[in-house]
Length: 124
Image (cartoon, rainbow, N blue to C red; front, side, top):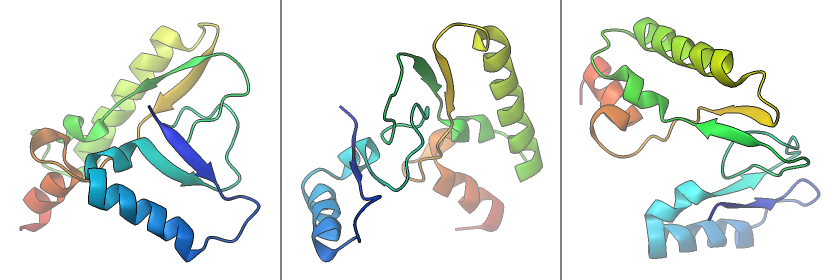
């Protein structure tokens, strides 16, 4: 389950930080299923911040997987753009298509890791 806490109409407090720290202590991998939102756009395709105003679906990607074997950021960005264009070409006219969640998760190892990609480009 993905969820978010909407802080649009309130000042973030230490209690909000404590909630995140509890996630980190008790179930760190679950932090990728939680977010804080501010002035969230309805029917945005981004998980876990999505708040749907109308029925629909989005496609979630892990774009760092496309960095595998790339020698530059430009090459990686070109691969991401090509993937997005292919998805939009296939689904763009389909009723209910809200878009693509292409959020980059920084953790992990291997092809899906932003930290791994940066380490290969800049050194550990």
